Image 1 (cartoon, rainbow, N blue to C red):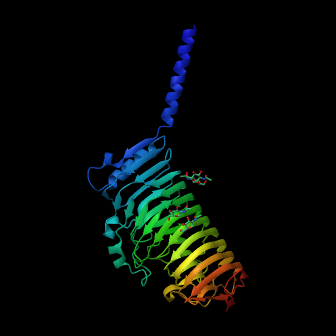
Image 2: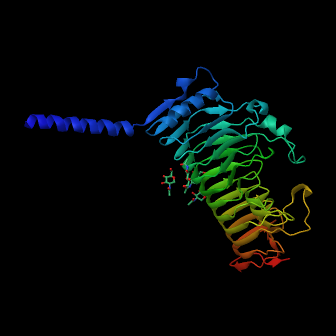
Image 3: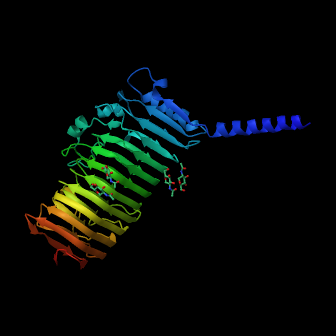
Length: 391
Ligand SMILES: *[C@@H]1O[C@H](CO)[C@@H](O)[C@H](O)[C@H]1NC(C)=O
Ligand SMILES: *[C@@H]1O[C@H](CO)[C@@H](O)[C@H](O)[C@H]1NC(C)=O
Ligand SMILES: *[C@@H]1O[C@H](CO)[C@@H](O)[C@H](O)[C@H]1NC(C)=O
Ligand SMILES: *[C@@H]1O[C@H](CO)[C@@H](O)[C@H](O)[C@H]1NC(C)=O
């Protein structure tokens, strides 16, 4: 009787252990399982399907070596967390037409707990596409594919990866919650067109940490609906700096709220930190709680700028003021060198002047002398060492 009971409990225990190990089992998928040649396009999609269906955490490994891949578009929801570890280099086709008008070369959507990791590189091979880019002069220009689209991902991480020579923006973050880039690298030549590093829109809690971004356009840009963004220990340059906006062009834009840019070094860029809104446009969104602190500028053409008359290539009229309301913006402990005498430009809207702007220990030099500040429709609170405002 006693023996029998023991047998039953052993059986129950075994069953219990078996169930636990089954549900929690993690899975490793080598992409080579699905690919017999250098092109991993189909293998990528098949590996994703297997990983996404796994009831335990899964990891797809893309080993060292050079792989070729055309546009991919994978999505969740997945049964458990999915990681892609890239140790090699993945090359996009150089010919933009081979991506068949994909908005992004690699699009990953609707996943909770996604990780992209590894020492690998995603090479967009953009040089050929940049030559065809006429978006600077022609509004209805053909849009090339971005390297990455991370859409509607929650609790996700990109770490250690390099994004190189995208045909357009490197990364588009849309509709994500709690998304971190850590030790992420973006590399494209200074002369490459529209190759913004990371663009964020309609997303909450995005962190960009310990990263280097060297490109031909904005290092990081925040579109409408960006909330709780932290950019820390990031080097930027060459490129166009860290930008909020441009905003105001459309009526349905969501507010941009709570940005902290901290301990960053910005080198050889056109702009350093900038907020830009369009004049004579209908948008009435708001920008608030923007904090820029502990920033080193090295030879930056325009280190600190709020521009509510943003109008590149004279595409617009400056007749009517911007309707975008900007408030609570602090620039604190910003040091280094400016390539213009007016190193701080704060040009706010005459219909909605900026409120709660603060300059605190902003000590930049131009040719060895302190810079000056231009302030229009704003009365910044000045503490510590900071340039005196003139209109
Ligand atoms: C992400 O979070 C949002 C908000 O909590 C939720 O509505 C959405 O379903 C989540 N997406 C996934 C893929 O888990
Ligand atoms: C954010 O995502 C990371 C990575 O998945 C996770 O470890 C962390 O717990 C998440 N934070 C919150 C507040 O959910
Ligand atoms: C800052 O980022 C660099 C990589 O760019 C990294 O090597 C360094 O450890 C980071 N510092 C901290 C304090 O995390
Ligand atoms: C601040 O940035 C410098 C230069 O990139 C880096 O060496 C240092 O580790 C960073 N500190 C923190 C706390 O991020």
